[in-house]
Amino acid sequence: MKILMMGTGTFAEPTFTSLLQSRHTVVGLVTNPDRPSGKGKHLEMERGIKKLATDAGLPVFQPLSINTQDAIEHLKTQFNPEIYVVAAYGQILSREVLSVPARGGINVHSSLLPKYRGAAPIAWAIYHGDTQTGVTIIRMTPRMDAGEMLGRVTEPIHPDDTGGTLEARLAAAGAKLALNVLDQIEAGTEHGTVQDMSQVTKAPKLSKEMGLVDYTRTAGQVDCQIRAFQPWPSAYTYWHRVNHEPMRLIVLRAIPDASQSTDRPSGEVVAVRPDQVSIACGQGTVVNLVSVQPSGKKPLSIADFLNGYRVQVGDKFGGEAA
Image 1 (cartoon, rainbow, N blue to C red):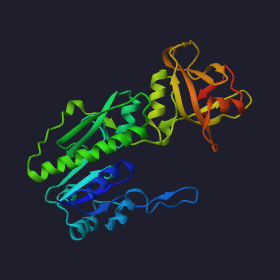
Image 2 (cartoon, helix red, strand yellow):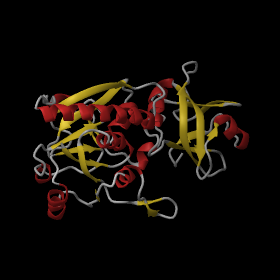
Image 3 (cartoon, rainbow, N blue to C red):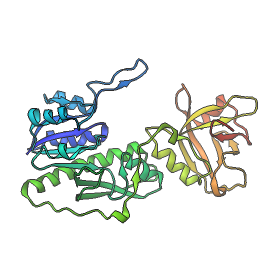
Image 4 (cartoon, one colour):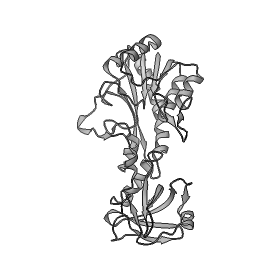
C-alpha cells in the first residue's frame, strides 16, 4: 500500500522505521514545523523522524495546520496516499483530511483505549499508579482517539519505569502492531471494536507547572509523579531554609520509605543522614530523595548534594512560597 506517515517525536520513530523497512511504499512524512531549541534558539532541524525521512530520500511536509485547504490540496497532489499511519502527530485530522486516502487512516496510540485518550497517555498511566498499559491501533475519525479499535497489545509498567523508558517499549510494540494491522487492512480481514464510552478517561497535555511535586499525596504517589514526568516536564520542588531564598531543585528520583512514618506536615524534612533526606508526605508516609539537580547545575546523588548543601530536619520542601 502507498502509505503517508504522520508523526512527531521519538514515539513515532520506530513505526516510521518499520514502515520504511516493510514491503509497503512510503510516499512521505508529515510532521510538525521545526521549532526553536537550545540556548541559542536555533531551529530544531534534520533531527529525529525528519532526518529518517530525508535520509530515505522522502519528501517532508510541515504545515502549521494540516486542516487548511492548501494543506489538503498538497496531500492530494503531492502524496496521493492510500492510507495514513499516524503516531503522536499532535494535530487532530478533519473529516476532509481523512477522506484524502481511499482507506482513511490508522493511529498508533500509547494506551489501552478507551483509557487515556489525549496527548500524554504514558505519563498519566504512570502518574496514576497503573501497573499495566499498552498500545491500541484505531481507525481514525475526526474525534480525538475515538475510532474503532483494530488491534491492542499490553505492556506492564515496572516499578522503576519513567515516562521515557516506558515510551521506548511502547513505541517498539506499536510499530510491530501497526504492521500487523496494515496487513489485515490490505487483506480486508481487519475487525473493528467500538470503544466503551463508559470507560473513557482523559490524558491531557502536560505543562511545566504539573511537575511541581505535591507532598500532600502519599509517598507512593509522589514517586509515581516524579517518574511519570521524566524526561519532560521534569518533577521539581523548592527547598526552603531559614534566612535563605528558596532553592529550586529538579527531583530525578525518590523512593517511598515503608520503614518510616511521621506526623509532621507534608513537605517537612523528617530525617537527614549522610546519603538520605526523608520528607513527610500524605497520610503519614515518607519519601527519600535519591537524586536531584539544582537549577543550572549537574545532577547529583543525595550524598553528593549533602556534601555541598546543609539540609536540616524541619526544612520545608514544596512550592515556591513556603
